[in-house]
Image 1 (cartoon, one colour):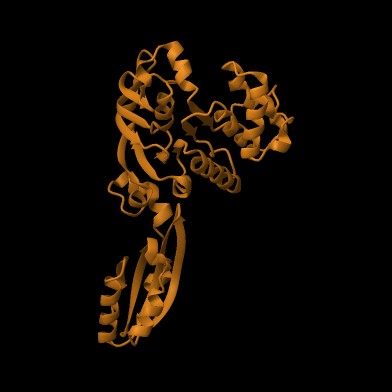
Image 2 (cartoon, one colour; image 1 turned 45 degrees about the horizontal axis):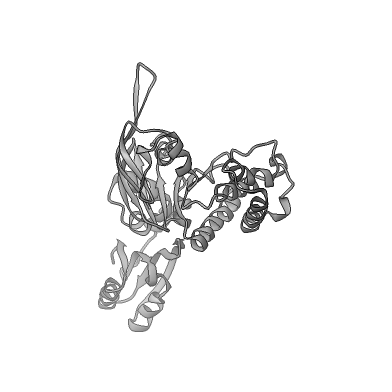
Length: 339
C-alpha cells in the first residue's frame, strides 16, 4: 500500500545542511498498522510528511496504492491527498467551527453535496463516539475528544491510508489507550492501512503489526513488532525496547543467599508458552520446590510475554533434570546463580 524507495530529504538554511532522511526504504502492506519509532530529531515526522508530499524530498520515490506521489503535479497531488488521511499531535482543528464543521470541512473543499455531507459527518461522529458533541467547539472539548474529531475529519473522504504523526503524544495514558483502541477498530472495520509515527514504545506495543526503528535519518532495523521487541538486532533498537521487554531485577534478589541445593533462574515466556502452567509441571515431574521471587506479564498487541525470577530447591540431580526439562520448553532460560 505504501512503498518508499531510497528517500532522501535535506534541509538547508543556505549555510548548513541537515540530512533529515538518508536513503530510506520501507514497505507497508495493505491493511496493516506500521509503526515508525525513534527519538526526537530522528526523522520520523519528516518521513511521514514526505508520504503525502507536505515535505518534498530531494530524491527517492513514494508510492501510495500504486500511485507515484513524488511524480505528481499540484492538481494531481491535491486529488491524491484526498485518499491519504492525516492526524496530528496538536489536532489542528479550526477553532471557529463546530465539531460538525471541522469534520465537514474536507468534504466541502472537494465539492460534496450538502445532503451527503450531513450523512457522512453523522456516520463518522458515531464511529468516533462524538455524536453528542456535534454542535460543540474545540475549546469545549478535552484533548481526547479533539483527537477523535481529528480522526473523523481524516476519514471524511474515505482514504485508503491514514498517517498518524505523534497522534497521542499530547494525551494522558488513559486517553492514549482509548484513541489507540479506536484506531485499531477503524483498521479492522475498514481495512485501513495506518502508518503511525511515535517516540512512545507502548504505542507500538499496543497497536502495531510491524515497526521500523529510525535514527539519524536512517532505518536501522525493521520487522514484526514481536521480533524487534524480543530479539532486537541493533544497539539502537535494544535501547528503545529496554523499558518494555527487560526488567530490572532488584539487587537484593541477585544478592540473596542461596542454599547449596538451590538455583536462581530468570525465565522469559513469549506467546503460547506464557499461558502454560510450566512451573506447576516442574513441581509435578521433579522433586523440587519452586519459589517465585519476581515476575511480570504483559502483551505486545495480542501476544503475551512475561518474565519470572524463580528459586529452585532440591537435590543436585533433580535440579539438573528440572533445568533440562525447562530448556526443552518454548521459553528463554538464564541461570542467574547456580547451586
